[in-house]
Length: 96
Image (cartoon, rainbow, N blue to C red; front, side, top):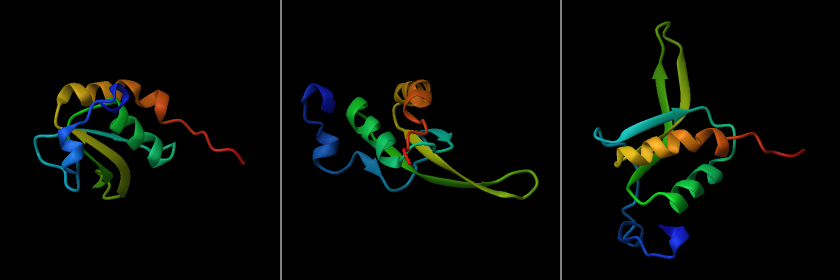
């Protein structure tokens, strides 16, 4: 973990954040209220496993297309931790 000043081998070799979401990852979808950097910085700092973070587009029952952010994690416990803390880090904090 970055907060304990330990090098993560996955991060060193550029294998921690994936460009695609493997089927065995546990996804957490949400509506983005803060900026993307806040969310990704929290993941990089507080978690240690591989993850995917990007948009997820889907159709509802009425064939309307919706887009949400998706963070998916290889370690299910990290997905649970992220889902529990999400309300605290995903807040509207822009000043005008």
